[in-house]
Image 1 (tube, rainbow, N blue to C red):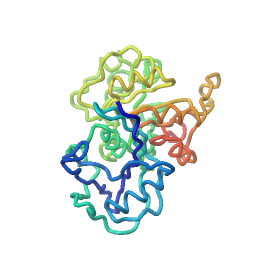
Image 2 (cartoon, rainbow, N blue to C red):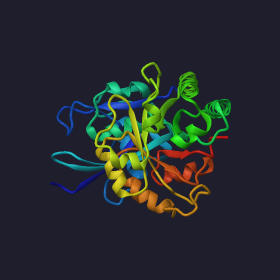
Image 3 (cartoon, rainbow, N blue to C red):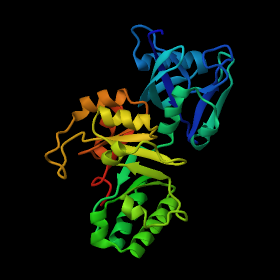
Image 4 (cartoon, rainbow, N blue to C red):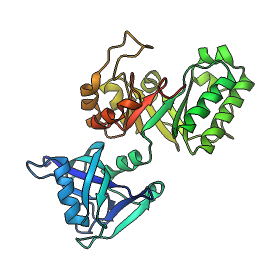
Length: 321
C-alpha cells in the first residue's frame, strides 16, 4: 500500500451557519461523494499554505484566518490518508466550482443526509458538536442541581453529561425525586437545544423508566469502557479515556467522541499525574474521533485546546457554578 497522503481540508461556515461542500468528480478517488474542499499538501507546504492554495484553485475564495478542528488518520483499501482539518474563521470571495464541481451550502444539522467518504465522517461529527462539554458536579438538593444546570445552559452550553453515581444519589435522592430530576433535566436541555448524555450508575438507571424521556445518549467512564463489548445502539456515545489503550477501545466501540484527561493538575485528583498539552496533542492527533480536553482546564484554555487538536474543553467546575 502507498505511503500516507497528507491532505489539508477546509470547513467553511458562512454567516447563516451553513457549510460549504462540493461533489467529487466521478472519475476521482471516492468519486460521486460529497466532500469538504481541500487537497494534498505539497512538499514543503504548511497546512495553512495548502489550504490557501487549494481553496483559491477549487472555489476562488481567499482565506483570512483559520484554526485546527480535527486530524483524522484513515485507511482505505487503496490508500492511507491523514486529514488535517481546519475551520475557516474568515474569508473573502464567493465560492464557485472552478473545476466544474457542484458546490452547495448545507446546514450543519443536514450534513448527515449527505454521502461523504468514510474519512470525512469524523468531520461531520466534529461540526455537529459544540466546543464546551459540561459535566454535572456536586449539588445540595434537587433545586440546587436544576439551578446550576439552568445557569450553565443560559451561558450557551449545548452538550451536557448528567453524571450521577450511587453514593451521590443516596445522599440526596429517593427514586421518585431522581426520576423527576432526570425528566426536568431533559426538559431544560430540550428547551436550550442542548444534547443530554447520561453517565449514571447501572443500578440507578435500571430503576428509572427512560422510555418517555428525551435524551441524546450515554457516556461511559473508563471503568465501564473497559467492561463493555458493544456501544449502545441508536444514540450518541462518548467515553472517558486516560491512555492509549482506552482511546483504542473507545474507537473500536465506535464512540462518537471521547474525553481525554487529565491535561493539567486538578484539585479533585491531586495525586493523578497530568499529561500536559504536548502529550494530549500526540494522543489526539492519532485519534479518528473528536477529543475533548478535561482536567484543570477552563474557558481561558480554549485556544490552547484547539491548537493542540481538541474539539474543545470538558469541565465540571468551570461550567457548574
